[in-house]
Image 1 (spheres, rainbow, N blue to C red):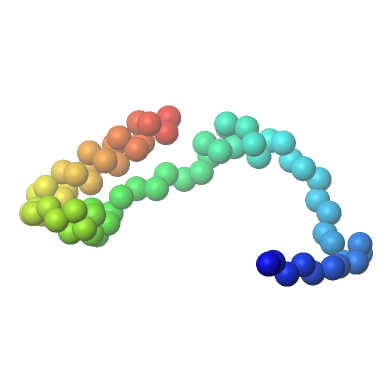
Image 2: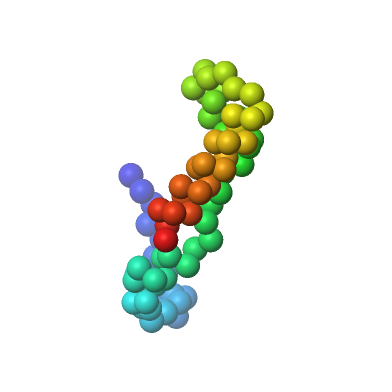
Length: 72
């Protein structure tokens, strides 16, 4: 069972709803998340894949270009 806390009306902060936050333009303004070599190495280790540094560098460039293309 969840606990419920009762508060008084003056303790509640009321803000108007900004509908622009739910539009596509607002959500597209977020900065892109790019992959790092460390993250790629960790994924390869979890999947049990063997790799070298040239493969990691190529994968980073390829995936970051793909992410940038898909978010435009």
